[in-house]
Length: 475
Image (cartoon, rainbow, N blue to C red):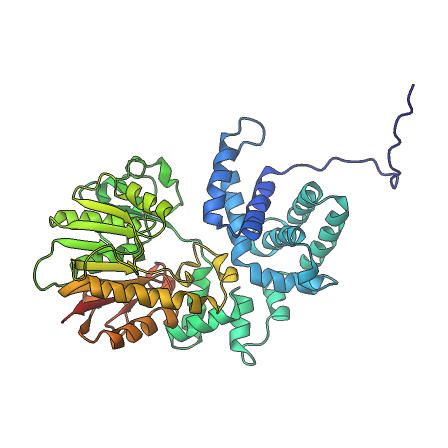
């Protein structure tokens, strides 16, 4: 008989198989995807949750499991900067020397300890068990030691220790306290203007989970129909908006499944509505969405155009995104066309359109509530990369509209380099243009500034930080 392999010597304690916690394992997998693949949580998490709900075994998720997993993922990403500062004081090496999977587990534990109501002992033990499953026993001991140090104080106590005094370094203080990179704090402060209260309200709003907002596409659905859903209330500003105050699953709503309604931030809706209602001189028959992907604004514009007997051309450079636009417009009550084309090299003649929208690619700093990982992924140098494209798209838009027609320049970023600087530079090159006051075209929306352009804000309007400038061709 062959000799059986010997088990490795242990400390004498019986071996215990780590307990698998499906919720925390899923949250860890989502964070790893964000870190390793530069994925976005709002794209990674839904399929993971769907698979967990469809599981027929003991690991099948219920509503509470899904809510906890979502909070763990988004909360950890939003507060990553603050948690990094705390963890850095509790480890014996530079944070960059900690393996990324270990850091993800530590951040998950820190969020449970400092950002939720989970009891301390449960947060530590559950995270250590997660570490045993995904990292192994050795590194689980390291995780246990670090978390016990973190657990010695609450968030306010830690912030007093790791954030520099506001009077000595306001931007760094706000960066640590509100978990934003310092350069983002500085840029938002410049765009917002004013004193400390406004910037702190904005940074706090960036860290709040946004409501799901639906749009009822005119001619296909009504806001009244959507208000029949559970926990649905009217939008604040858009007549087509409905908010789901308790989260909700948009895919479970018949009108959304049918494409008669969609998920669309109210700020995005307001941009399309303002362009559609801008006063024109002359005919109003041909509209263009020059950066149409993934299709939310195009679907609303197409429906609004149909009400007036106008036709929408939706152009998107990336073929796969053009496919998304086609899906969003499928069933539009009026004429439309979707093409895959480069908006800086137009596939149409100059002066062909009465209304043109260009919602240009940008850093996305206006949507940090929805994509919290973007704040850590973006760098100041990204602004230089977007600048030529943004200017090129606006120039093409102004060349594409007829004399008397209107162009809407929009971007989901409040950074001045992506908003007013772009508009000012391009209008210097194309002199036969006038800025149209956009504020009257957003009736009822308060605190829109001095105009004529409009900057929306999460803390003031409950929307993403959308920017809109309306420009009329005069010659």
